[in-house]
Image (cartoon, rainbow, N blue to C red; front, side, top):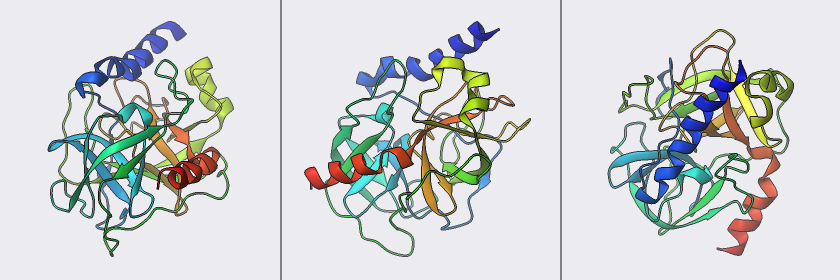
Length: 251
């Protein structure tokens, strides 16, 4: 019974990687979500290719954004400061640094830092995200947000930033679904018997738990929103040293 699932997962995760050189990569989206309360995710950014949504991300400080490694492009327009795409300031970025252990085959270490060409102006609507000091346990309620598609497999992209609440799932329970596709630094979240989750366009966006960034949207099953197929995130608590050291090295 696992073979069809594996095929679907790899098609979803790797099909867009094959298109990466053309910049056509899509990530993941919010299924069965609701518009985020206005200004509730002031660290959320969108990585645009021109004016088109490419991925999500989070603002670490005035010069750095954290996103997924599979979102890499040569140039980004970084939208911030507004829950509505196109409604806030944009800053160009042309330098990005993938985690050196990132694998396009397994999506291990799916994390990347993007350095802005200019400095973001912090304000009520533009804030730095809080990096974690520890890894939150299974059962913790969290919020994932993004401008990704709200339907799957057909796509419907919202103008408004969408949110949904999901619960952290233990690696043991998640491996019952994804088997050996689940790596040691991957984090699963979802709601039992619910369709709600991230999908295409949400990749790189934040999974916020108790006010700290615990996950970055990485991959999942396709079509998105299949009950009891959790979303898979890069577990940020295991990468805080790499994040800080990389920002320090290339400041």
